[in-house]
Length: 167
Image (cartoon, rainbow, N blue to C red; front, side, top):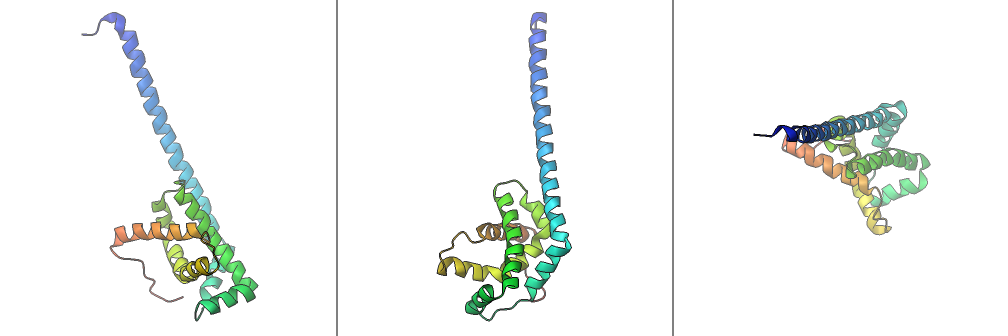
């Protein structure tokens, strides 16, 4: 049995432990709230007319092969701007996922098909640019994002994403 003179010490200890647990739960909730707010800001940007216009325009481009792709990048300023605008957005989301600032499952829930369709369209050419032009960092976090979101998709659906239409 606890002696009465130890009761204030025990109660103080219990109070400190309770305070620490409460503070930890508050911090955890704040972190989740900040992640959700950040993701919704990104999602709002993705839903804006400019992004959707750029994304749609990019989806209209077709290439016969790598040389045709490179020719368009070099000669067509609009194409280059579309690529940079759309892919840079996903590059930024990829950095946030890589740094654990956004839960990849939240990204999967809101924008996975955009990520899959865009990377599958441009990814093979990006990989070739990295090799031919010694640019190993080119949209590396976009590729990371694609791979991470694909892992989640496969876990949930049992197969890789496959668009029902060709872009």
